[in-house]
Amino acid sequence: MANSRSDNNGEKKFFGAVTKNCKTVIVDNNKKDLRKEIAQRRVAKNNIAMFECQPNGIKIKTKLTHKPRFKLMARHHVVLKDACLVFLEDRTGV
Image (cartoon, one colour):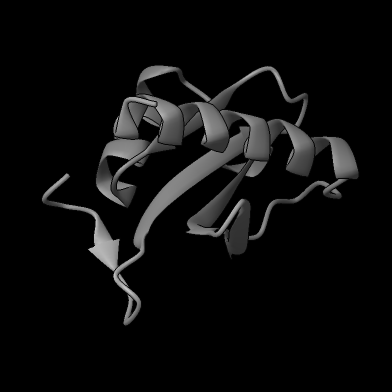
């Protein structure tokens, strides 16, 4: 986790990506590793939305960093937040 960034509050930032069909969701500590994983899975850049995520109490705040060519629906956000929660649970060991 040495590569993850933190803001003024000390909260760690991490990155997530979701595909157009919501079948592939990737969450990682830094953007470089996230892009490597996307390349390994051979997902086209046009079919993916990338987010910068940050835990904010019991919620996860997301910021879109790569605008996709498809319309983001509520299901994309739900799938991404579920994957982020699993990632945070694995990272903290809860």
